[in-house]
Image (cartoon, rainbow, N blue to C red; front, side):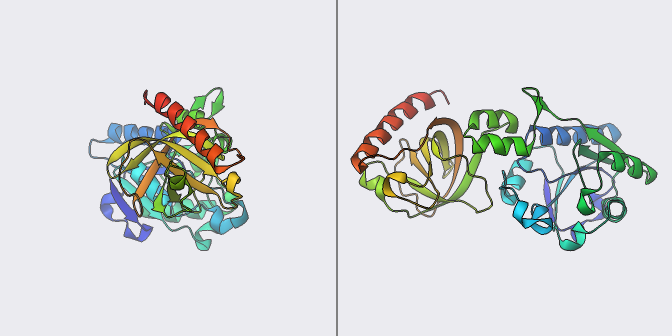
Length: 311
């Protein structure tokens, strides 16, 4: 997969193919269905046809209505990494600007899609919106793209438990701590990535050292609590207990994500770590003393070691 940063970097080899349009936060199973449909459409057209995914460098609401920007399931670099696992030839990241947000739907279709991307086929989700004030939708795209000689395929939603898969639905599940159901909609475990930074050192003092992660501000962090997790570092994967919260026993005020890795020896400071959330364990609790907290953590570790044996 070739990454193209900026629509001005489009070349003739990137044109005349199947183009998938959307923001794709999470690259969940619904988004994956769009990509698979685009791949099928391209292959049916010609063995040499290519698939291009067109997306933006930031959530459009950052420009249009910053107060309403949701926390992201995937920041840009995560999205690129995930996209490389799917049958895409090109991943185009356009800068979302005030100028772009003000384009009328027909102007966006004619100047960006038809004149620059020059697709033979466009593939969108059933709820795709485009143009100024989100005036454009699947119906208007179907109607107006046909006049420009572009075929449009609208992919219906993937249904799980009688409801469509969507980024909004997944965010709600994660805010509830329901990482298991979120996994079923994403098609993978939800994860966060960050650099290990120095914390207060309390875990080490209690005999249960933890790695404190610095998470990008725009990334969605699941509900506060203790989780079973899998931690990737230095090419290895370790079981672990993940704590999300404000350290109530010590009167903390800052949200912290920290992990205790099972059977790991070594220094994690400064390393990039990825945490996969496997299952919810319990709410955060306020303990009468650090010693009581340490005892509970050891119980969590024993239970986690037993449960994680099957992962």
